[in-house]
Image 1 (cartoon, rainbow over the protein chains, first blue to last red):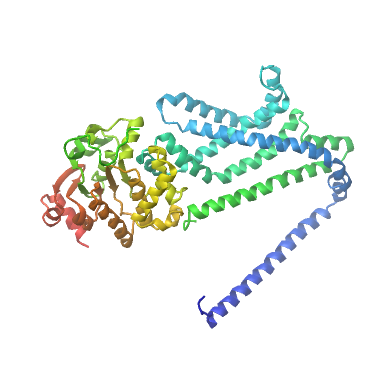
Image 2: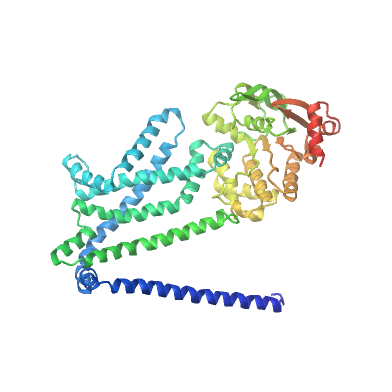
Length: 282
Length: 257
């Protein structure tokens, strides 16, 4: 190590910085406590609070309904875990189809455009109801006829249209010079897409993708409208039976607990990529 | 795979790149006018000229990043294929270095250099890596192999781009204003690599304004203006005694400061 010691002036600078840091911490803490305290006070002192507290925040009912909600929530989690990878694959395929250049792929390109336009125009809840009640009625051979299966299909169909647009935006954002240098090396256009464009595009669209993930996690609750006994259905079932809506708040807590870690994880991943690939250009 | 190294001897003569009556239009604009050019094996040709004179387009036409409307371009005796696998194979034989480096931002320096050999030539990854490290050492960025392009200076990035092109063992190297985006210090380090390449006998077509490089390494200077080759001479003759008015005018402008 060197024998460098900070000068008087440097020590002074550090002291000032320390004082500034302390001051900003004190201010931040004070203001936060004050604002949240006032908000809580406002809610608690409202005339109907007693009633709301009993109906929505009752510890006994929360405990009583917990197991049923947990069982139902497992369906939401399974739906999400199975649908999400399928959505990613299908959406990427659709995005690539829309970006196809070759003349003979024109029908594919048009089909992909039509798919994203039409599907995004139909409310997800409507797709779920249509698929869950309509498809089993077709009595198709070789595919499951359960409402849950078709709810999953509806979610995949609906979300892949949105996610496809996200991927397409990412692909379009990669500068053409990247493709040119890949092609100049002798890579074919599909190889350039596979090794150069898509990996960069995917990194770039992680934040909007995450947004759609979170949205999908919550939208798995839409299957309750097709009579699937998921967390929301379980909560409503309990609430209607006991005249208490605490379970709805419990369900909300379940969803929040599931989405927050995912958001943190994606932020971390994004930061890591940014640090090395855009060093100095942040 | 139709692959052969720089020592292929398919043709008897010495001409490697031949452009014959090449014309190109961008809409109304006639960007390449009757270009006839023969580059011999091992020759270093510098293309110079004002911006918009068509020198970059000429450079990019040689590996068909730009198509031409008339005339033929052939490499090592074979005309450029129109598209598909054959065209990709041809591009693998022609190394290209761009003004803006164009390294793959999501791949490390080493991966940038091995991608082509592994995916196009089918070289085994370990072999490609060994070769890549050799090339990176040669251009002086061996220490940076594990970094990402954004973590390197412009001069280092451009040297990596040269190594990346060399990894394909091309028959000819095209440089499209390789130093125009760099500071003087970095220009020198890139030019050193290029001069070394020329000494080793690489066939090169270089679009540049670096007269120092042209004087040291070029066998021939082409002066382009308004899409046509106006003058062709040895570097010494061209710079000290330009014949055409347009060349005199151009040199007068760039030498004034």
